[in-house]
Length: 614
Image 1 (cartoon, rainbow, N blue to C red):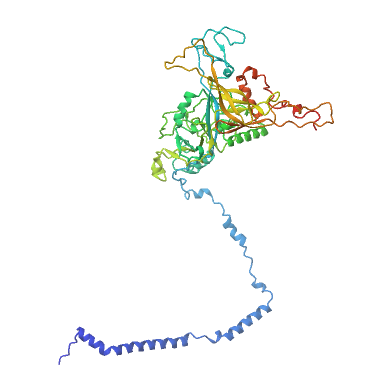
Image 2: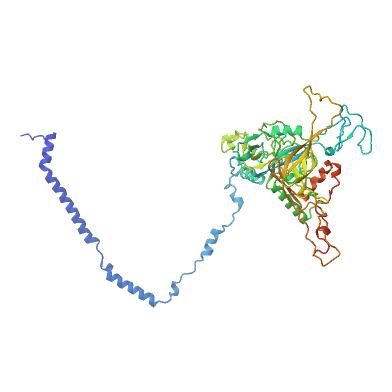
């Protein structure tokens, strides 16, 4: 009989599971119960605490140990350990012994690790300031056949003039005596704004040193900061207008200077305060320290330099006086040459100047402080200065500057650069400097004051000396005006002879007398003190020692409201220098007034402190 072959069909398997399902589940439960029971019996048998680990036994051993410690006050001598000497053991770690350098030749690299060249930071001009004023510039001399300049107080002969005879007091044949206003040299009155700032010279040197001292590509001409052209901007902010910045073209200004300026005045600061020509290569006809135009009768003062430069120069002179150095005369100008424009040195390889090309006469110096020292200490800053004469009286201006350096990584091989793009640009511009405060440009009129032998006859009036441009010389001329408090101050001006349409003068009999007119230029606002040099009631009595003397008179001061709306304050002491320059432009009958005693009774101790003054 054959055995039945089990069927593995789906119906067969389902029937088998339904018949034996409860048996399978019961078997699994039984196996789990046996496994749990075996685990519990094994824990009871092998992991239960021994008799030595019971709490009472442990407490007894702890009490015995405490009692033993209390009985033994000092440890046994044979159990005391010897001192370890910790300080001696770590000394070799703190100061390792030097090894023979000859044994370490192969352990050191043959070459120092060099860094790749990075782009240096370019620092802006610091503490930018602006000062406005009016200057009397010298004009180019009108040279005649003899090549000389006309004498002050005379004019050259004009076509059609009759020959002049040599009379006493004349300047010679062919030259006639001019009116008093022509006793000063011809000039041009120009409003100006001088912008000064500080170039962070030392800071830039340190930046280049930190960037390129360990660079893989060294070039003395590149690893020294070389200043390129600068950008200066001006904004007209008259009456609170919003600043709209316009660029000033230094090259165009330099070309105008060569035509309009008669010369350049030397600076009163040593050359150490300025960037040398080799430190600003490629700047043809342009320099970071703009030259000063030659004045007709005066010299530039502190307004032409930055206050830092003035204070630093005074400090250096004081230090030299203490140390006994006598190689510098602080009264002698030691600045750059008096040529109006200074070119730069030759550009480093790979540079092409946008303002000119070729050798400019100098190679960049390897000394980080080129130029003559002249005993002056190394300075942290160099002076930036720009003279702007394209301004209008009565307007207010603000300025800002941005300098730039020649890129020291220009056309350097890429393997020496941290980024290959660093070799593409020619110049590296700095951030803009601070904006200057708004500076108002004053008008042409200037007011002076002087003392008189006696008070004006009309009470409540005072003499005002007005400096007003003269129509012939272009220079200033003094006008003596007696005005009442709150009255109008006017000057007398000559009216030019009118001409007809054909350019000929109107027909008339003889030469007409020149007509004049009064031009109001201001108003006398206030007067303080007495204008008389020896006012009545102030003279002391020298014969009586016990009598009290009157105090010195109040100084004389004037306050005038000019035509430009500015208040002009003056006194005889501040006016003395300019008064002496222009006193000859007054009529002859007014020059007899005191010119050397600008304060009451002069400046002698006897006048300031009368006899008997205690």
